[in-house]
Image 1 (cartoon, rainbow, N blue to C red):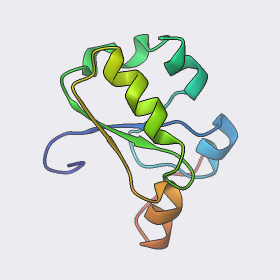
Image 2: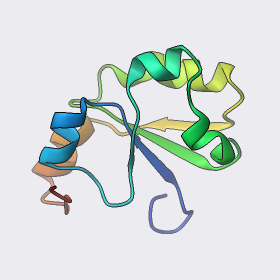
Image 3: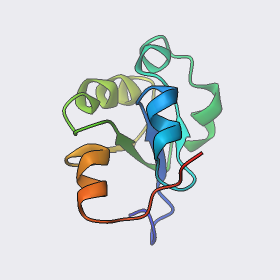
Length: 95
């Protein structure tokens, strides 16, 4: 989905964890901002595929449900989160 369908990646981890390593071109938005509908940064992606990333794949489901309620049509959760991505030796951006 990321490579072939231009999926938008939303990383819901803390800013510090995001800086330690994140997927290229992902957006760092905190869960509290999503729950409060403070998602102006990603509003234009409501019809795109959206993939939520957390630390281990456990806390993204409720955030995904909040996005669906806000009108996002195609929301997915990355199984095992960034830990799974990292364990598969996939690339991370660090800054």
